[in-house]
Image (tube, rainbow, N blue to C red; front, side, top):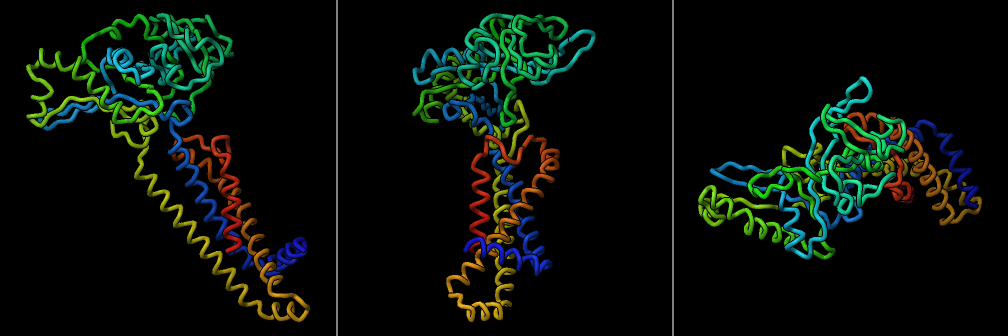
Length: 401
């Protein structure tokens, strides 16, 4: 019976080509646009969520307000990291990261500039999920003058990932021994580690001056620890260690600053909020804007509603003009249920043909979207296994409405 419904539906579609094309392409364009917007939104919302402990990772920002001027930064003093682990049991691990700027790397007679180069503590692999291809994550950054590189960097300079023990000369001065190779960082990362040099032996990292903010500190807390608790920890540390130095240098305590309407404080930011919610100008990577995401969602819903309403109106108008066919079918013995099933089958078949064209349109336009946004979005990949199911469900629902 179903096979017969589909055969009749196809015959009616081909018989009324103009109407069918208008209906199919109207819905297909709407679906394609919504697919592209959805892929962009999903990509933006997924930043840093691939980290195993993403929900329990925070970054420490410094906020200073003096004489009606704000100095907000993603950095913090070097000793904050060790103090937090020592003084607060709910903090499991911390790691300090500092950008190395444009690192010059010499390979043969050529010199290359690498922008995604950082220095970090060996605890980096305890906080962030950075799958290692070669090397031991617990030892790879434990010694001075050691370096971990991404798969891309290893292949770029050596043609293979089997590079443990080899040396890279950076900035024509520093020779680093490669002690690990990690998989390339996910595109959805607010900080993309391609070159990581060890902080071990760095004299600046040993400084106990709490008013010098050079390092970006990330905190891994125990599950169940609230954001308010984490903020409390870092500001207790500020009062215990930074305030005495502030008082000594400027004869002002935190209370004195507050009386003048000024402040010096630390503020923690959830890892997964950095990309879309940060307003800092010195982020490691350009961020997004959550307001734009809301706007795109509204636009996608609006387009989808318009496309569906248009599809249903055209289908209804077409059905109303087939009263003669309905009369003939009733004379031939078709009951009301069979007639409804036939019309619904035609609508569903039309909607799935529209889905097929929508996928084709989206595939054609995706490179343009990637070029404009600077992203590497794929139509279907491991991060959105539910998307095909959602598209089929939406298409089926539209066809049955």
